[in-house]
Every structure is written in structure tokens, then in C-alpha cells.
Image (cartoon, rainbow, N blue to C red):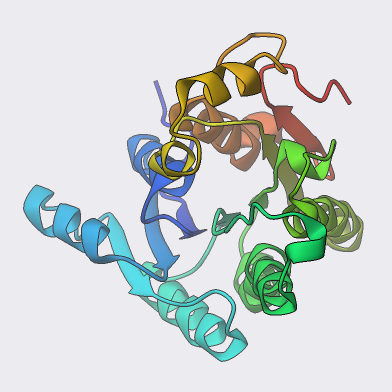
Length: 250
């Protein structure tokens, strides 16, 4: 059976850990080669060296909030991969704080990474994507961009902005045969989640908001991303797919 991303060249931001790392693994499993832009690539570099994956994965250290680093990183990725067929924007950061205690530097950083950084990546990748058939962009937003969560105004705003930017970009790029979609995860069982929510009672309160009454896994989110990236989703663009166990029902 043919692999869904056979011979595709995929750029993944935030691929050093969590959902992004699961996307890296599934892209490789589906026949793609990938370049990873991440602020912290040390663990990924070790994995590439130890498992002999240098022909499949190219880690590139980039702070996604800095436009010039993004421009350099995307160009480097395209040169290493000899083109780009797809982009997965998975880089993101969170902020738990009441609005009246929020620092505006934190607001700026959240928007710079979660929204502006993703758009910088899309902008820099566009010339490469336009030169390939069946190109696709998948932005990792959040269920918090569809239905807000208390004490996370900056995060919710950044992820809602990413949803609308995705839809607008899909309109602009449709005639170029470039599909643009978003995946909106709910609470996912990652090391970051466990650092922020270590109390089991808190976990139970969180999952009680979900119809399926459980946390998601990184592999479940990555599976949705791979579907939207692949030709199986050839008529899907401008969608915000909630992969959240039934919290938003939008």
C-alpha cells in the first residue's frame, strides 16, 4: 500500500517535542522527509544521530518569533529538502494568568509565536509551495481558539486569530492549489500539560468538560494533521478541525 506522503518534503515548526514531534514521526512513517524548525532541537538532534535518521530529518534551530530567523530557517529547510510540499505550524506557547495580572510582554510573546510566527513561516514558504503540485499547510490552533478557557486571554486570542488567518489564507491561495487548514486540539497528555497540571483532581476537572471524558494523545492529533496534509483531504481547505474529544462541538 502506497504511503500517503511518499516523497513529500515537509517543513514542521515546533517539531522538537509534543504534538510537533509526533507529526515528525508520522510524516516519516508515511514516506516524507522533514525539516524541523524549533528553538530547542537538542533532543531531536540526538535522536537523529542515534537512530541514523539524518536522511529523513533535518533539525534547524530557530526562534519562530523572530522574522529574520524564520526567513533564514525556511530557506535553509527548502535547500536541504530540495523544495517544500507542505508546512505544519506546530510551534506554540501557552500562558495561564488572570487578565489583570498579565504582563504585556507576555501578550506580545504569545502573539509573536502562536500567530505572527506561523504567518511568517507561511509567507516565507509560499514561493516553494507554489512551485509544487498538491501543496498543503496545516496550522495547529487549539480548541481554545473556538471556545475560550478562563485565565488564558492571550492564548485564546492567538489561537482564534490563527483559525481566522487560516481561513483567510485558504481563500487567497485556493487558486494556487494550496490547501490551508487548521487542527484544533483539546487538552492533550504531554509533558508540558503535566508540568502545568500536576494535580490529579485538576486533571479530572478538565476531562469532565469533554464528551469523551479523557485527554487526547499526541498521536491522535498528529493523525488528523497527516490526513489534512495528504491527498485524502484534496477537497478540504479553510477548515478548523476540532480534535478535542467533544469539548467545543462547533
